[in-house]
Length: 318
Image 1 (cartoon, helix red, strand yellow):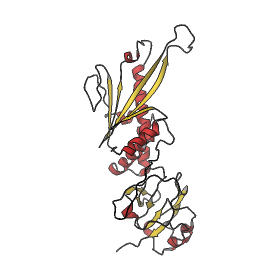
Image 2 (cartoon, rainbow, N blue to C red):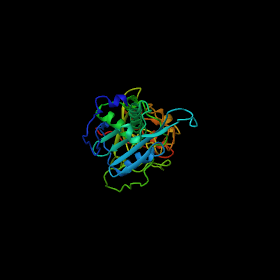
Image 3 (cartoon, helix red, strand yellow):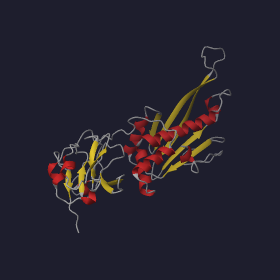
Image 4 (cartoon, rainbow, N blue to C red):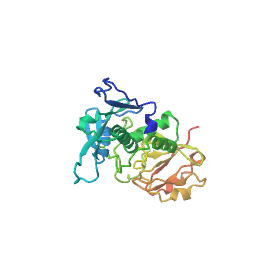
């Protein structure tokens, strides 16, 4: 987080208020503004639920609070004469909206009692605050939003965007299952605007929805590492492969139906497909990637041999 905070987080000795935080005289205030949007109550609840086993979490209206608690001791033996301990904490506040503000305060040590023996309190509190922020940005849906921002605004490829986020969050703790699935599923009706459904618990049944472009939102494209071909995607959720949606504009495969039997790879006379790994997908941990989609001759061989009917070939219009 040291790199994320550089030139963006400001410390101040001031009674100035900022976005609902009111530091008293002598308090240290850290601010960071993320160029992403967080307004959906389900997304906010996902951040809250994903970290509630790691930090003490609270959520009120448009704000999420994550607190880290630690204990300081003046000597290692609790039975020794003169032994003292202090329960300390630091809280990070996430303020949602059109942008996301992350704020933390380092209070004077007197807030926790008369503990003159505690050493490096402010330094430790500052580190733990940055650890909380890094952990949030690496593990929750905010990670997906930051990666999407790097891809769209910085023109990074997907792998480079992930690497950039990891570089900017060096203090992050890895939290398994920190992106809980939203419970309510959104129904898609004919003619409705494209929406994203709930995360899948298992493979979808075929055949592929031939109207997927109208029923699914356009999502982050995938760049083939070997030849730099860009594959368009629809309905893709995040980067953990749970929901991959439909990939390919002309050679279209619904990867949440695809069971990776390989028949399409064997059937294609011009070797459009190649294997690639998709760990975490609900249907299979590898997929036939349309790595050479522009080479398709529209023979429909792959479409005809796919057992779950996950493929649809669309002829290009001249």
